Length: 249
Image (cartoon, rainbow, N blue to C red; front, side, top):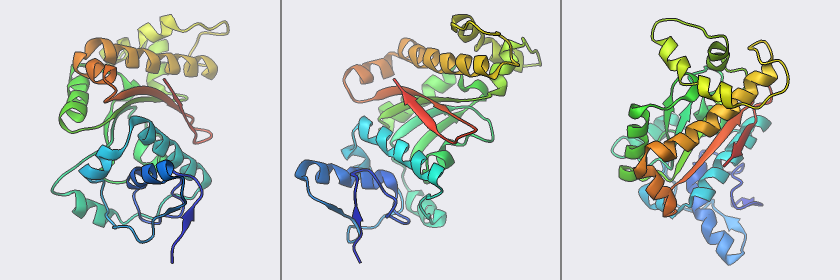
């Protein structure tokens, strides 16, 4: 039985289908203006090169937004991870590379309803970049074909609080030092302390914005790809209380 989807990138009806594959099929529906029926299309369990290459960066971001909406509504796609694993074993074609925090409550693949092979995810406390992260992103985009670079922070971030409090602990001290420029750059008129979560979240957002800007500055490879429209860079904040991901340029 066929199921009709009301929105070009809405995949609540797809069951196990990967939402990014559906977004690629949605391109046809968007250009023809017709209804989107996908029940009889070829079924695959991992994002293919052909389908990934048809997507625009904007479609990929929209698909992640739709996945987060499903997550918040408790309507995540029913996935067969074993089939996704087997389908992607001989090749991967992720659509995006993410830089996110290691916080156990903010796994991008879960909160944006992603499957195996959909994204590259660099995770480090405070979602800070370094040369190794930049090299990984360059690999993901220039060599592996990812079209979106997304830096995602989150509310009530422990790394941000640690940086505000000038915490020191082994190698963590150097990591937190990378966040301190964001503290100084945050315009805030209230209490500037780690006990004030509004300030913590303001610094977390500024940290995301500065990391996106620094990726452009420190990676000519990615900056050139963005200038040519091959890649889109963006930031996002995940709210631990509401489960919502806010995207911003």
